[in-house]
Image (cartoon, rainbow, N blue to C red; front, side, top):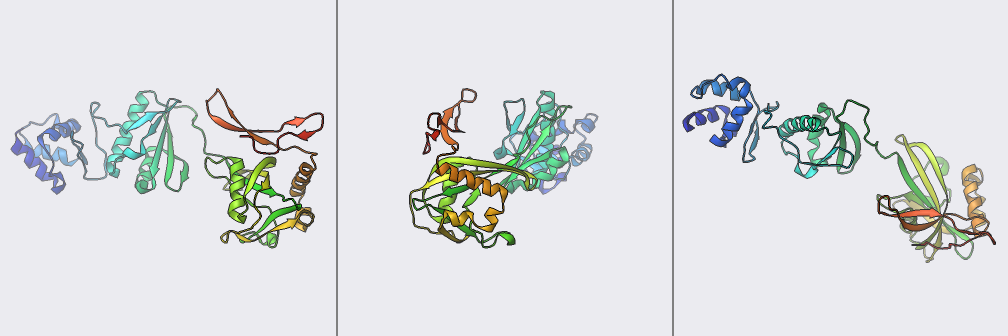
Amino acid sequence: MDLKSVIVVSNSIGPKAKNFTVSSFSIYKAACSLEAASLSSRNSQAITQAVAKYPYRYDVNATNTPISNNRIPFTENQRLLLDAFDDEYGGVIVNPEKLPVDSNLFASVLHSSISIWRTQGKKGIWLKLPLEKCDLVPIAVKEGFQYHHAEAGYVMMTYWIPDEPCMLPANASHQVGVGGFVLNDKNEVLVVQEKHCAPELVGLWKLPTGFILESEEIFTGAVREVKEETGIETEFLEVIAFRHAHNVAFEKSDLFFICMLRPVSTEIKIDDLEVQAAKWMPLIEFVEQPLIKGDRMFKKIMDMCIARIGKRYCGLSVHKVVSKFDNRLSSLYYNVVDSASIDCLNDSCDT
C-alpha cells in the first residue's frame, strides 16, 4: 500500500487519527489480521472497514489513541505488558506510576498482561490504583480483581492467577490503640474528659488514649498521644497490660496497650479539638469513680498499675533487637526481674 492509501484509511477514522503514519499502520494492520489477511493492499475501502472495527491504534512511537470502548485484539507478538516487578512470592506488583492514562488502553493492556503472566506461571497480582485514577477501578473489577484494602490516596486490588486456593495475605486485621497512665510525685494521675464520647461516659475522667500511627512504635505512640491531648511531656516506662477485642470497628479486631509513663513536665495545655478538660487528679479519687469501680476490666488494669507503683508487679519494658531472620531492628517487649527482691530492673525505656 502506498502513502496515499494510508492517508485515505486515516481520514476514514476521523480527526483523532491525524497521527496515523506508515510505521504505525503496519502494526495496526497486524492487529486486524483476522480480517485483513484476505484483503489486497490496494483495496483501500476494505482496509478502511477492517480498521473501523477496532478501537485502538498502537503506535510504535508510543502514541496511543482511543476511539471506542472495546479492546485491541493484539497478536502474540504485539501483546502489551503493564510495567511491573516481581515480588518475593512468585507474583507481580504493578508500578502505579506508569499506568496508562486512558481507561480504554488500560483495559486492553491489563487483559494482555494477565494472559502473559499466566503463561509465565506468575501467581498473585498487586494493583495499586491512585485516587486520581479511580476510573480504572471498574475495569479491574470486570477483569476479576478484588478489593484488598484502601487508604486516603489509593485502593489496592489483587488478582490470583492459579486455579487453586488464593494464598495472598489478607488485609490488616487489627487496629492498635494506646492509653497512658501518667503518675506524678504527688500521687496524682493525668486524666482527661473527651469532647466526643458515648452518653454514658459523659463526665468521666479517663486516661489519655489514641491510635498508633502507621510505622509508629507503641511506646512513642503513647508518649505522643499524651502530649497531643494534655501538653504533658513524658517518658515511657513499661507496658502494664494489653487488651484484645474483636469486631470493634468495621469487623476489625482491636489491640489496646496500657502504658506507664513518667511525667517530665507539669503544665497542662489541652487539645481543643478532642479534649473537653484535663487535670492532675488524686489517684484515689480516680479509681473511686463509679464507672471505673464498676468496670471489671478497667479495675483490674488499675490494680496492676497500683501494684507496679508498689513494686509488686512488673510490666514489659522495650528493648531494641535485630533478628537474623529479616535483619530488621525491632522492638521486643519483656520484663526483667531480680528474683532475689522481685523488683523490676528496668525503670526506663531501654533503647
